[in-house]
Every structure is written in C-alpha cells, then in structure tokens.
Image 1 (tube, one colour):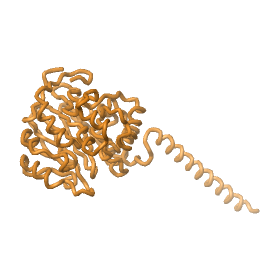
Image 2: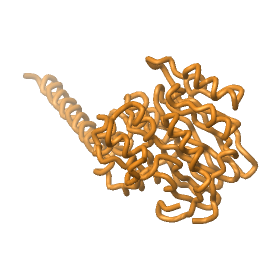
Image 3: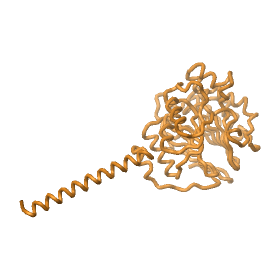
Image 4: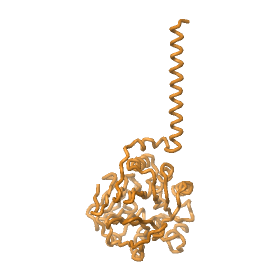
Length: 338
C-alpha cells in the first residue's frame, strides 16, 4: 500500500477517535448536568438573568394554562412561590425559565395551596431543580387524597426543606411586609376543613381545604385564594377580625393585622369556578384588581356566576389566558400592572 493510502487511513482513525472523544465528552457533560439540572429543562437555563430590586414587591401571576403559579419577589430579596402549575412539561419549563430570568436559584418559601393537580402537579420538578428553604403544605393525615398530592408529599419530605403547614394565622414577615394564612384551620380542629377532608374525600371538601392567603407590603395587599370553596371564603369573612400577625418562626410578631376591606388585589379562586364564588366575599373586599389564572379546560371557566360576582367589584378582571403573565409591582408610592 502506498504512503498516501496509509496517510488517509491514519487521518481517518484520528477523525474517528476525535469524534468518539467528542461524543464521550458531550455524554459525560449531559450526565453531570442532569445531576444538577434535568436535561429536558436545559433550555430554561439558557436565559439572560435579570437583577431584582430591593425594597420592591413584585407579584407575577404566571400563565400556566388551566393551573396556578404565583411568583412573589419580596422586598428583602427573598422569594415566595405559590403553587407550581399542573406538571405539564411546557408549563414547568415556563416556570423554570421565569425563575432563571429573575436570577432565582433558591425559593425561600414554597406553598402547596391545594391537593388538586393543577396547583401541586408541577411542584416535584421545581423541588428537583431549585433549592427550597421552607415548604408550607396542607396538614392532612391522608397523603393519598389525590395522586398529585401524594407525589408532591413524597418529593417535599425528601427535599431537605423545612416542612410547615398551611393553617390559620401561620406565616412569616419582614420589614414592612407580612404573609399569613386566613384558612384553613389547623388539622387538630375537629370541625375544621382539614378534618372534613380526612374524613371524606369529596370535591367540596377538597375545595374548602384549599388555602386562602394574605400578603401585604407598603399599604398594598393581596388576597390569594387558590381553589377555596364558597364555604371557606365565607368562613374567612366570619373569622378574619381576630387575625393579628406576629413575626416569628411561622408564628406570625409585630403589629401587622389583616383588614379585608383594604384589599387591593384578589386572585379569583378555582379559575373562576361557580363552586368557588361568593358575592359577599367581593362585597367585603371590594378589590381594585381581580386576577383569574385560567386556560383551556373542559368546564369553560370562568363561569358566568363567578364573573358576575367578580364584576360587582371590578370593571374587568385580568385573565392569564388573555394577557399571559400578569405582573404587579409594588413600591411605597403604590402599584403598577404590566
């Protein structure tokens, strides 16, 4: 064989070896990456990272279709995430992309507000991808109340995060802001909504055991209502006057107090379900802004009844299905919607 032929064969071997080495490097990189970031979400990390402002509260109702996920960037730099959508790949990817674009590597407070899949379905993947300080979750004896909640429950207890419970008057606070639960009551209450759900798994009991939450900063307040049923909303109207927030380890110090009549922004519960509506709720809160997290669904939410109740207080509710992500930025001067 000629020297020319030998040279060609040598060159071919070099190319083959180089190609194999390249494949090995890529494969190894993917394995290493997957330890920290699941490869299927890699594109969510290829985003420009913005900087967060101190002294500003930013609340973003994320467009996750027929589901709920609300990102709250607190004025002291901490992060509160309420729910994680339904777990569909596109929705989880969108949530992770948003977190990364805001430079969020750690979620200080993660809340599972409901056992329904469109609220907690995406939380296990978020726990896999992000560090979490404290998880607030329903205080139920029956962790298998829904499959989605059972999966989240397992992920939460295996995450290393501190576990706390979503129950009346629990919460946390910082300088000039506080967060607290208005409902449900604690699991030990034999007349409470958690006890009812542990006793009988029904749609009504699931809805009533969903969290109602309050966040306030610089005179601007938000009522987050998850999928709270009508009875739960009416119960808050009966009990809220005794809630005074104190600031400690999930046992709310300070002189913060909830005044429902001063609510500025309310999330409409249950994507606008008639089962989650209360005309009196909107009469008392009389909010300036109402947000409905909703997408394509089999029940054509929001319902006519829910819209009628909401529109008794606001001219036009804001729908994520129409506007996409809805961001409300709060400063000492007030708030802006974008």
